[in-house]
Image (cartoon, rainbow, N blue to C red; front, side, top):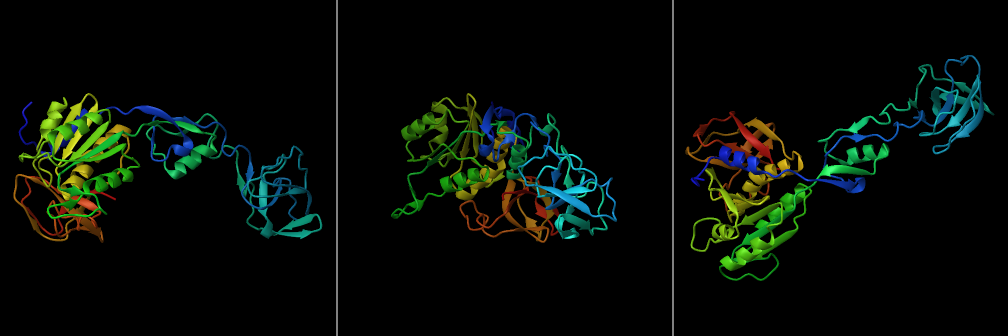
Length: 395
């Protein structure tokens, strides 16, 4: 394979073609938030399972109601109780929200619309119709019907809905096992003393938070020195992951050992270097079914490559889309040189997108307030205010 610098489109295509198929696992419904269903889920009961009152009020038979006469209240039914007794003509029962309507009733009048005298009620609701304030059995779904389809995202509301149909376990596409290795002799953990020549390590913090956005917790986060032997050992320890992310040491400097360490670990290089800014040294490889992403060390390049390449790979893995892609007008004129795709930090306001200051790959202050990444194709040289640009959301 020719390892010349490739385009962004080529990089995306190669990653997509090499993404592994997601496994399927069964999880408890309580633990299913954020997963995607791997099969259709069928309801176990009618929902509601019986004709149900939607109000506190009185249940009676509308067809047999003489509007000029009062109804005789013959009983009371609370939610959770059930009556086998039939309600006869010109009779009613006191009923509460969620309770099962007894035989012989088909309408509920709310308690505010009746006048009670001893055990008799006079109905004063002039808009009352047959079936008012009732939830009919099976009106939400029938026993055996598909409650949710394969490919559906399990949101909190979706989980509540499935629980209401009697489901307690679901088959889902598994989330990838992700490991992170950060390289750099100069790196010090935040909160520790710092000496001349050192910087605080931030890339693992950004990547872990980015994965948390996807409801994924990495299994390992390791920071290693710029020593090839240590990098090889760290890589070897994580090659059972589904996705391995490395930052730093991927360029061509004298102390950039990541590419050679990956070669010595048996990783098959698919591409190295992309025609883009930031993140030109971006690396992608594969070891058996493990996807390996080598990101530059500059933090803005790390987060750009994460959102533009790793998030789509995770989307392919667990069959879930995370962030929207949009087109919006640019708020200013902008010029660039042709030859590289630019990824620029942006912020949306009033249905337009503005370029933020400090776009250099080592600067994170603008990324900290950005809500999107603006993508300008490599052939673009000049954009006018109001022209549409492609953006990908990151929140």
